[in-house]
Image (cartoon, rainbow, N blue to C red; front, side):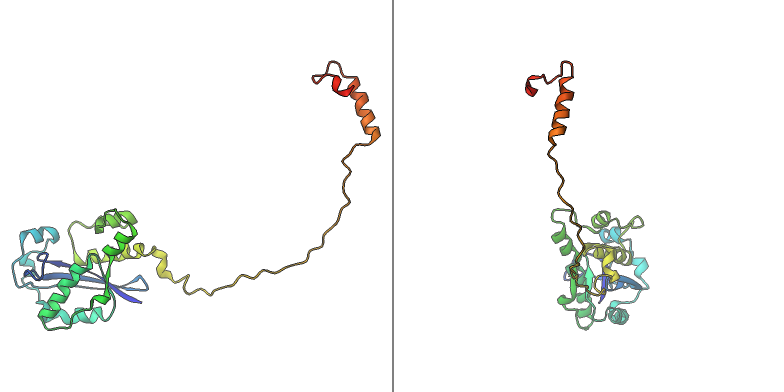
Length: 230
């Protein structure tokens, strides 16, 4: 199964409010294992970059000044995405910007049935815990030491590791369980030779009892007294 884990960076929080997508990073996975194929692109937002947004991802207007507009360069992105499910953290946000840009340039949108939201998965698996990407990386031991600012490709790569852990751990992509033949256990009855031994006689003989009584009668001041033997 092919899946795309992706993340976006934007000029703000609302496409409907005039914000635009400026960066997207995608990681290809097949059977929940990263293939090494990625897609990464910056887009000119055709508007200014608010200082609050730049403080989050570090992308400036000057940096984006020579980048292509989404409408002029989205063909490669659409081809990379194909018809695979798209995995994102708080996926509704990323989908709103991705579909907003696609709609703006007259391209078909991506159906929400293809959306996989790791935030919802994390909330169902670990209710009451923190569910930010940083918190999930800490929970699952994913190294995020090189994450100083948000970056679409870096965050997608971290999320790909978190996604696998949320679904059961790194071993799920190896196919060891699903590909292994099912072996039915069969019980086989085997007749074994049994040696029958005669019962042992545990009752002492009259001679043994007499010998024991004679021995006890010679004891000097026994701790149990002699009345019991009279």
